Image (tube, rainbow, N blue to C red):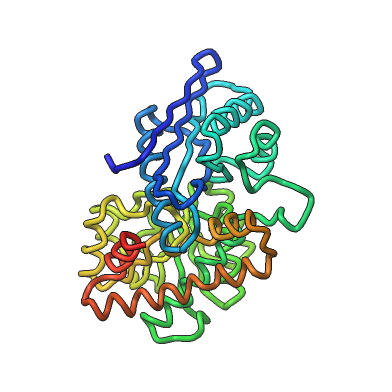
Length: 334
């Protein structure tokens, strides 16, 4: 089990409510991290997800030089019927009990509308609807950051300043993956898409003139860039053997089954952009929104992800190591 500073478990058996909030506290500021509201096989799996993801949020905040600690929350989606508004109220009370040490926001399975409900019961939430420019969806900025990072990776790996004609295979076309696909399509990228929601993926493929493949086939697609934008732990000893790409750059959190996978990728001459380096756009947006920054300023800050990748690659080459290890070392020093 990965380390953490605080793990808070909340349960109400009467309504079948179970949630976990995990924090990595380093004294930098309140932890910002999304709330996942998805199915888990067990409570132990839900807790482990919160721990892993809070660790990644800590790294993401550090590498992005944000004044925040790392945190993550999960709510187990019940197998039977439930009252969503009641669950969100209960979760808001859990967040409020931490007295500002954790600020929640959207993640897989939650929406800005959900955050608006949560905001009725706690002030420790960001990303809710206000009827102003602040209503920008964090997914827009996450996708922008990944897009910017992909352009930097292409310049480093292929020595190309344009994405025109390159082939990107995107795993997951949900909130972020769909936005990323649209940005890449506008640049003349050839797309292959998949998603566990097959009908949705087919609709997106039709909209963007892309190819669709079944979820299990996405790993073996010969492409210039493989972009994981779904759930985590998808680069493992089985899938890594199927990959036919030279760059892995996606929005998904916790992409590697374990750190050893980064060494295998390096041996295969595959440039892996660590997720917490690449997908920090949403977090940057939320952190700067709390500071009262406007959309233009936030976009400029998100676009610095590309510059950060170039700097970290230069450090990796100078030290004779991989980008993954260079970024990890930078985080530990932050």
